[in-house]
Image (cartoon, rainbow, N blue to C red; front, side, top):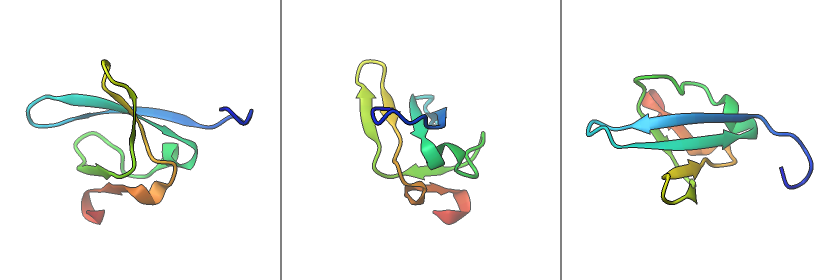
Length: 72
């Protein structure tokens, strides 16, 4: 990272019913968010576009902005 500290990283791909997809990269404590599994409904707040043509996003820096299935 820019501050010189290493952060955990996790990339997931989200796909909807129309087969449209986007990759989201999570950093730090968000990389360990529970419930990010195949078939789960996920709502993510405060994502940032990191590659417009490749359509990838950087996830939020706070795990409270990630909601899975039963939390929605």
